[in-house]
Image (cartoon, rainbow over all chains, first blue to last red; front, top):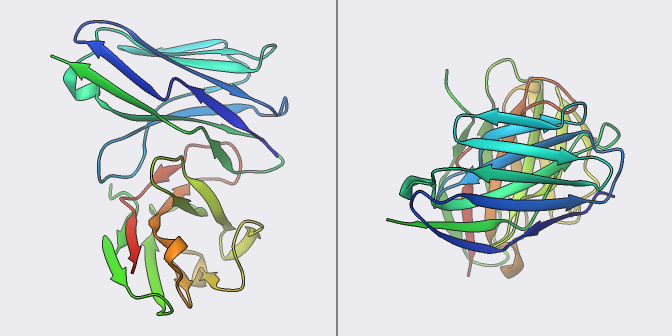
Amino acid sequence: GENVEQHPSTLSVQEGDSAVIKCTYSDSASNYFPWYKQELGKGPQLIIDIRSNVGEKKDQRIAVTLNKTAKHFSLHITETQPEDSAVYFCAASTPSYGKLTFGQGTILTVHP
Amino acid sequence: EAGVVQSPRYKIIEKKQPVAFWCNPISGHNTLYWYRQNLGQGPELLIRYENEEAVDDSQLPKDRFSAERLKGVDSTLKIQPAELGDSAVYLCASSPGPLNTEAFFGQGTRLTVV
């Protein structure tokens, strides 16, 4: 089955800096890669996603890049704000499984 | 539009007792998922429904866990009997279609087994 590795496990930045979280996946058939933000006591919230026919996608301060050859994808957050502090999860999905396999999560802390 | 609704939000039970969780997906979403999230980890799939049919329950511990989705809308997940290791957050999610579409999560039910 699919295996997703996520790094780093914790990330601390100053407000205004950029943050980058990286994930690798094992199944070359995976073709859908969402990113979720989870705040304390809440369920994961979808913030951006990318499909395998696209190399990059941007939505305001967040962007995701995908390298299918290397089987890795990354989340980029620019101009970080304290409210960006949360746990971020990457995930991957394959057509044959129809389920999301999640990474272990990254605790992002943005210091004012 | 209402999101995925789960209840209860919190549940504390003694080991060997039964417990049930309820989920109401987003209206019109045919696909429903139950995930379990252990502390400090990502969610892991327990079961996936397409309408009322369980199409992937390979990760569901069937000796003590059961689930149903009558009429292809609401769903319940049951544990009987609960064990200490079942303490986790149980998340329900739904999506419009079966494959590679956005999955939206509920708030989750935090289960503590003592």
